[in-house]
Image (cartoon, rainbow, N blue to C red; front, side, top):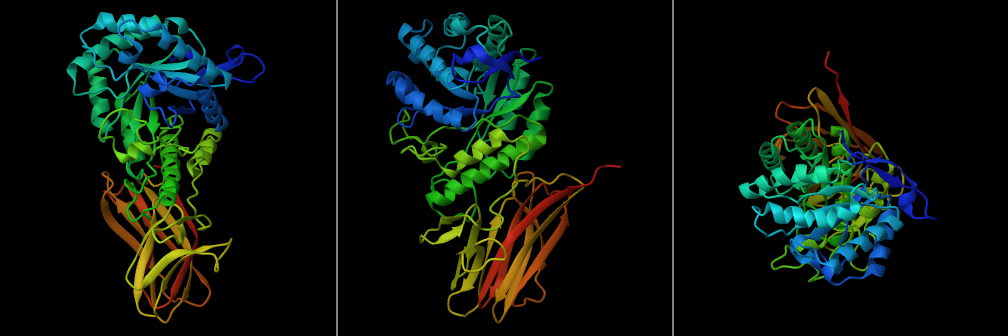
Amino acid sequence: MLAVATVLVGSAQPASARREAFAAPRDLREISYYPADGGWTTMWTNWRADRYDTDLGRIASLGANTVRVVVQSELFGYPEPSAIYLDRLRQMIELADRHGLHVQLTLFDWHSADYADIAGSKTWARAMLGPYVGDPRIACVELRNEIDTTDSAALAWARTMIPFLQTFLERRTPVTISVGGSDPLPRLGALKTALAVARPDFYSLHYFGGGGETAYWTLLEAKRLVSPTPLWVGETGYPTTPAASGYADLAPTSSAQEAAQSHFLKTLQWASWKVGLPRIGIWTFSDFLPGAIPGESIPEAEYHLGLYRTDGSAKPAAAVVSTLFSRTKPRLDFNNGFEQAVADAAGHAFPAEWSGQVRAGGAIAQDKSVAHRGRASASLRSLDGRTTGGFFHITPIATAIPARATAEASVWVRVRARRADVRLALDWLNAAGRYYRTREVRLSRPGSGWTKLVIKASRPAAGRSVRLFLKVASSTGTVWFDDVRFSVRETKPS
């Protein structure tokens, strides 16, 4: 059974004095933290308590109850931590507590000491955790961030250190360890095998997978791999730079990528909920200013994973996270009515969260002059009256389709053209997230008004997830789409 920590209510007296029952990972609503101008070690060397206090207040305002704080062993002093850095950690925990936040404390970050030095590791861990044994402000302790599962010495070290931490913390504070990378399942399996009976209280999986099309299947298999030990998605996020898009055909603009970030996080939260896991952990609070991440050749995407921009303004994903922290069952909306817009490459309004392509002589956009309901639609029009075509597409939030299930989609279509070939399609993706098969229906008799187009399709044998396409195979005028609906009907086995 997991150790029980506690959750904070009220604000008049020290928060830790008024906490209710809290269990990690089940109750975690967590955001990882570094300030915009101080990533990793810089946060601790350029200490600014007032700045951190403000940022932690913003984290709490989103409905988070936990902040992830990462400490680097060599910076803090190994194997004997510096009194200066121990005091800064104390201040950080007190600041978090002031805002009703627990702390996930991630130890041994950037640890470069010899993993064979078990005595040194235990000495350092005792000094770091000694003041916090049984402290309800600490939600959980992560031994190591994204441990290298190809390093046998690191795995042997973890096999010793996990039970050591559990015993030292009197099993009152859960202990975890994380894996990440582009292939998290093999890493998670290797970690579990290497740890043998030295199991953490829960495993933490870090997932950064494209547009989230395979998230459900990845999490389902990850849960199976580590069962009966609990699993949690401790880090997930999406970069809002056009330099690194997880969605094909997305407009190469920051606003389009920010809408995609919201869509990705909604998809991951749905996948986690559907698999029966706790709420996802968010990476990270803020984007980073140039040079704020120590090291060389840092990928552009690493600077743009925050819920807030470097000027402190909130991205749309901040509101999404607030909603997913407050709801038990995730919302499945994805700008179904095309009411929200972003800028495309030319600066024109384009439906947020959607991707698209158009052939020469055509244009695709959000259109506020025509709507089935609401204030807008999505349009594809010929610029010169000649034949053109293109499509809009999106990954539904509930993109994974179980066996014996049927996907159903609908869209209202309006056509003003001499000739138009309009279709609604489901593209099936296989287990690797690659295209497998298409099922589509065609609008048979376009009229001057709105017509509803509906498709129903059972999942094919190798199909796992879907993308929804609104297609104009050919048109000499304008085609509008509005009020998209998508649902999955599951058939219970007899």
